Length: 437
Image 1 (tube, rainbow, N blue to C red):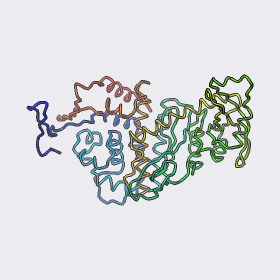
Image 2: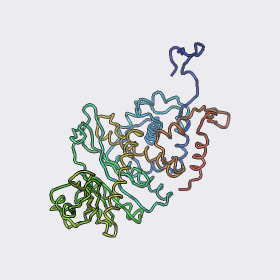
Image 3: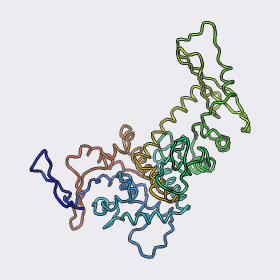
C-alpha cells in the first residue's frame, strides 16, 4: 500500500521516503521454511490428517493453504490475522503459497470458525507425524517428557476464561509437554484458567507413553515434572508403561521429620561452612498404592542454624544416587526457555478469539509453527546455530530483502547482495535439500 505523501528526513534534506518500492519483500528467507516443509511433506500430511467443518460451496482458499499461510505469518513474526491484509501483495508470500493473492484477514477469521474438537485432535496427530519423522532423522532413541503448565492471559469475555490464583490473572491454563533433549513441542492442551496443574494429566500423558513406547520405540523414557504433577496418576501411569519419572514433592510434616532423621550435628559442627547432603528413603503417602523411593537434598547455608530440605520421588533404583537424581531434575529448567520461546517467538498465548475452541486451535497452530522451526534448526544447522532462538533466525535468515523477477519460463528471487549471513543461508538450503525422510 503506497503512502499518501513522501516523507523527508532531517539528517539529509535531499532524501525522501515512501513505500512505493514495488515488487519487493522483506521475508525472502521464508523460502527456506517452504523448502523444509516441502521436504518433510507437510502439505501431504495435512491433507491426509486434517478435516474441517467446511460447508462452503464456492471458495478461493482451501483450508490447508490458509493453515500454511498462518504458519508462515507466525514464523515471520506477524501474530495478528490482520497482517494478511498488507501481505496480500507480498511477492514472497504469493510465491511460497503459489497464489495470485493470499487470504485476507476476513478469510482467516472464517477459517477459525470451521474448527471442531476433531480438528484439534487432528492437529496433534499432524504434529506427532512430523515429530516421528524428525526423531527418525536424528536417530533418537531416548526421550525426556517434561511436563508443565503455563498461563495465557485473556482480555474480555472469552469462553471458559477464569481467574488463576497462582498467576494472579485471568485467562487460560494450558498443559504442555516438551522433549527435554531436543526442545520438540510434544503436546499441548488448552484448559480453563482455574483448573489445577495436574488436571487431566493421565489422559494427556498416556497416549504419549503408548506411542513412544510401542509405535515409535524408545529405549528409555523419562517423565519430569514439578510438584504440581506429584500425583499417583502420574506415578501409576509411568509405572504401567515401564517409564521412569522424577517428580518434585511438596514439603510436609512427615517428609520433614524423615529428612531431619538423617541430619546429625556434633559439638564441633562447622557452622561457618555451607553444607549440602543427599539421602534416599522409602516413603508412602496415604494416597499412594505402595511405598516409593524419595530422594532428599538437605542444605544449610553458612552461618545458619537449620537445614532446608527438598524432595523428589522417582522409580530409579538405588544404583542411581540421590545427588544424580537432583542433577537430572534441575536440568528441567531448560523447559522454561522452551515455553518462553513458544510464547514470545510463536505467540502460543495469543487469545484473540472469543471461542474457547478457536483459541485452542490458535494454540495448536503456534505449536506447529514452533516445531517446524525447531526441526529445521536442530536437524539442519550446526550445534551453535541450532541453539538460536527464532528472533535470531528471523534476523539472520528469514528477514532478507528480496525481489521476485519473472521471465518467460523462470522466476528469480534475487536477495540482497549485502545480506551479511548469506553463507549460513545457503548452507541451510543445501542441508534441507539433502534430507531424505
